Amino acid sequence: MSKPLKILFLISEMHPYAKIGGLGDVAASLPKALLKMGHDVRVVIPRYSSIDPDHYNTTTCLQSMGVWMGDKEEWCSVHSTKSADQVPVYMIEHGLFFHREGLYHDNGMNDYDDNPRRFAFFSRAALQLAKDISFKPDIVHANDWQSALSCAYLKVWHWNDPILGDAASLLTLHNVAYQGIYPKDHYNYIGLGWQNFTQDKLESYGKVNFLKGGIHYADLVNAVSPSFAQEITAPGGGFGLAPYLSDKKESFVGILNGIDYETWNPQTDPHLPAHFSMEKLTGKQKCKQELQRAFDLKVDKKVALIGTVGRFVDQKGFHLIAQAIERILGQMHVQFVILGSGEGDLQDYFGNLPARYPRKAGSYIGYDNRRAHLIEAGCDFFLMPSLFEPCGLNQMYSMHYGTLPIVRATGGLNDTVENYNEKEGTGTGFKFSDTSPDALYYTVGWAVSTYYDRPKHIRSMVRTAMKRDFSWQSSALQYEAAYKRAIENKKAFDTKSKYYW
Image 1 (cartoon, one colour):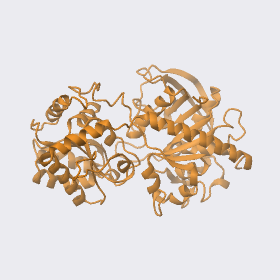
Image 2 (spheres, helix red, strand yellow):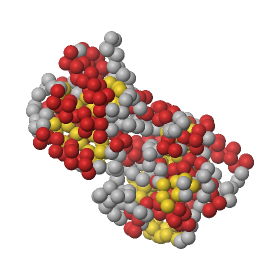
Image 3 (cartoon, rainbow, N blue to C red):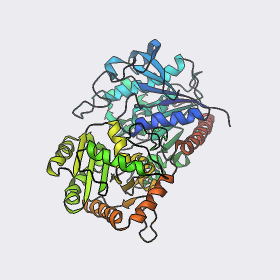
């Protein structure tokens, strides 16, 4: 093995401490895989009020830590603990910024007005933490807009710092639709110098763009699947960031996320009423029956059961489901279960669906981990009609549980799901391209007809899907290579220009 790296991993969510979506799963899984490879990885997250320090056996790492922002000094404390997988985790404690009802927005889904200050502070505080505990990272790994400014702070503020001066940066783009675009009124607080508030760096139509700035300053940038990397560099792609990503040239790559098979394993999953494997699938039928009971559906082992889990937002295609599901339930012999939350009108719609289709449709508004695992295990098909999907994890969970995905062919969904070949009886799922209710309806119909008319094909597809290896081992090796490229890029940068001021 090559020399172990010291990795400072900045992220705004981490399971089980604070999680809204797949970002939290990645934060739990990738550092774990890197630690197993022998690297010294430290994760830094905010200490939200929903995180109980006593429950996670945290200790006070720093009672008082000063963090200098652009126009004032903030004071905070830092808690530390270790995850169940022995990954060191540090939590930045700042009551004014992080003690509130949501991570990014209130219960009404309204973004907090001071988000730019909250997460600029978080990025600075994570770097200050490294200085105060004398952790000299080889690489600072930032994730999405919430920690993207750490890449800028390294080059603007810390270029000659004895602890941080040699640290390279990698920025992972999990979702470029959210860029952290805010009024420039906050820029003095952010403190990156008005000479850097330019179109190629941090400025975007008169506002500050956290993600755009991070892309400019990062030594390497990656998207979380090869297809998504191609999509967001295509003309007009990337929600306006395509030209800036294209400018990175070889310093922009796509690395597919993995999944944690210790957490998502039908042979050991503690949330299931019965376990099963590719060789012995009888337990999957018991999971299906339990799922039907949990959602008040008719218990029927023969009916095609379709499920989905996610955030009720346009990106995830739930408006397409809403426009097609009643035709599906009315015209096909199927059952449907949905778990999730998000936009109010979609919550109302899916929450009321079981009343209109009793014993055929079930819904749970909110998040319940047991039900999420039960849906993956008990369904015959898992529906993911995303308008765009940087990587996606549920389709990989589904395949490992012998549940065939029905997906739109975009981003990581396209990379991970092999479309059904009706002539050969091969594939691992069903794909469509158009962003229309009709495309979703007919693809669901294609899957359902295969379930009833070509059951041998379904059984073959299930076996193929369960054989697929989406473990973090391969992805972690690619991240290790990306870290080394970032370090080389940093060295090359240093020979040309030692600082940005």
